[in-house]
Length: 598
Image (cartoon, rainbow, N blue to C red; front, side, top):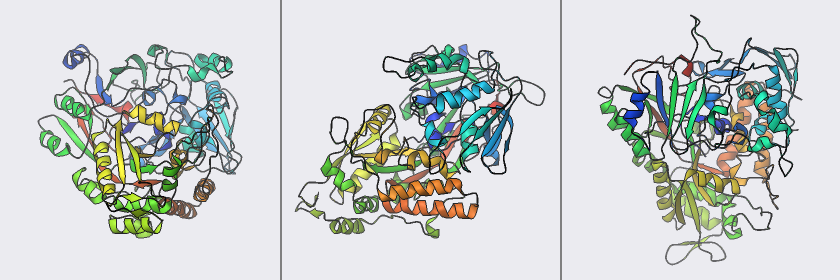
């Protein structure tokens, strides 16, 4: 669903991408950029951008990659992307795991404070997990990553003393430390009342608390920054959190950069214009603009970093949901649903897409064909050479599969189903991303060559998200961003009960009931494999488990993978102490960054 490079103090995993802040480049809007930058020149600041504004200031209700949370929150642990994502202390100064792997004790740092100066204590950790994340009355994607094993039970959490908190899991769970350590801790003193009071429907008022209509200065965090102001569709301004715990070796408070301006602009062409004019400090480069900016690197006083194939998963997906809504209306036209649920139909579509042409034309050759839902740099990645099924361009094979599955062609070469219905459906794509739209256009052209009519609908990203959440879609050209090294990070997508299981979304907490939802046998097998993988500490056996998952995913094709573009990031030379990594990007160590005067 999401594909932008992101900045976060803990992880870039797929399921957690909805919790994080995108850092891409953009222009200032509705004001004169030069005047704004001049006004702020007295303090060290960076200007970044987002193609979309924040959807909420309540982290539990967020389902967008374009958020503020990576700036204002931190968890118990963080990841060092200079060392392949090694876990390191953050709010917790240390942790211990029991021999039976069922108890994890975190010890908080001394003297932690919230951005309003109030003490941050073990009670805040207890509140965050027991009263918020694990509260049965609060719908949130975060629940999915905290479920343990076949029982899908939640951990328990208790206070040991003023600095130690203990988590207990019902069975050993390999991803628990990384998952739990990375979740932001929330302020009990600011949010407890909203948990304990209910609205007219009996739901905690917390669910509607801290929307984007809240004064940003009222949002309390524990991260690098606190919000100073927010103007919808224009910008978010962050001011350094004076109570943030980090200090350098000389005792100086970090981060060093006083202010961050996150500009909101949808159009990628405008992003490029404003970066070239010097108004922005970073820009994620698409392959079509890379040659242009590469020539301007020295004159423009910036450097371009190459992170290799992007961790984003780009795909074509069909809505396989056979369910009906509370009014007994099918989410997907039953005729179209019958096509989408034929495995050979999905495989035929995969063979019909000329991904090599997509790589050469749209990505200027700067990319790699993608075949697996697991990032190629993960030790669990299964390559085609190791037996992973691939779908190289073969329109003849595509037509053979369709005919074998009972489809037929009329005299005009249009594909019909066995009942004589023309195979035609609507294909969604977010309008803000030009390369994504270009990919969808090519998919439309390629499918036309095998008689399928895909009606392209390029719409605003937030509208796409709404349709996906409501299950009111047929086909989607989309992406999930930030694949990490831990396969279980994708459980929110691949578990049939996950809140990002878009291709066959099940019942969700707080929504009207749905009827007739079915889980296929292969979905059940993937469920089992993810549970087995999360319990297996032997790395050889773990790799075999996730290899089988990848083989099933490529056989059944709920996501038809496309191309991983090469990841390029242009960053102003005035930014010092960068430690660029392919997984973390240029800004993962934000607290260490400094800027020289313009």
